[in-house]
Length: 300
Image (tube, rainbow, N blue to C red; front, side):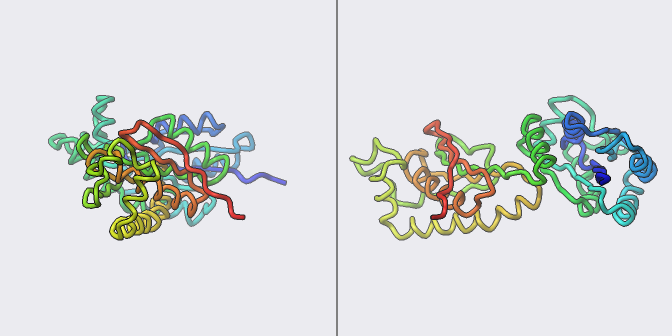
């Protein structure tokens, strides 16, 4: 039986990881061609299909080509119509990450050739806006925000080997007095809850101690806060997965990151791990220097 060829088109935002992704896919056995003009993509797909020696291939096409802005949308629509088995993967990242990557590599943004007077932030905004119709055509959106090259490699390997990567979810406790956690996608402030710090016998303990948790959850507002945070996470996680996020962090903060945030984080993580067994859920207490994977309780 003849095996179906796997052909991917990689596109997306400058600095979002397409080149690294291509190299990782090459390590996984893909034949890769970089910086393909949009007009050549249909012809290359036909050639790849006719070549019996190539089973897996990647074509990278993006804004580096001057004609990309005007021809890529119609080209991708044509490909999806004539070759529905060809997948389009769109790489994206948040603006802050893109700015950092360009600053670290010291490479110019491709849009500088068109808009030499604009700063980097404006160029990134303009590219994101122009590429929005192309992003809408993608079969898979891969958000590399917060990923290292090693994270991206593991993420792509999971997609290729199993068809669907496991989303990594971190529920993080922290203390506002020590600063906001830069990795957080969402932050919840629970400093309004009764504080065990002012109970002498509880002060030296942490939210991981039963006595502290029992004290906090004696109050109805703490129980309701637990429910609201959990419901918000349950609501947003499937959409993060759909958007191609590999890592999502929800941070819960109190004043010192010792009592209230720790107790809530422990329970929220347990509930999320129980509901989303296909995700990898971690609980992390920043101020206690502790991180562990949460294992869901198996159904009896």
